[in-house]
Image (cartoon, rainbow, N blue to C red; front, side, top):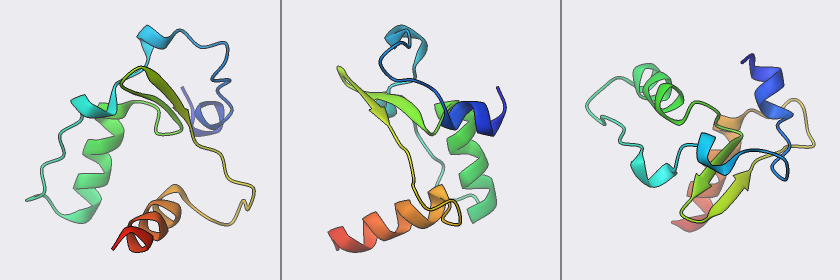
Length: 80
């Protein structure tokens, strides 16, 4: 599935069992940053739509100039 298709996934019509639960993702923190990102994407399969336990999480951005990495970094900064 291409990145653009992944970002347009409709969370209400998707088969929940086809989604990866984020609790099952284990990123090797000893890898360089680029490799950690690739490892995360390889495991989660669709970073825009995944499960968090019994919930389906759908990530969407309105500003097309902001990346998923930018949003995740901003979220993590707000929690510190």
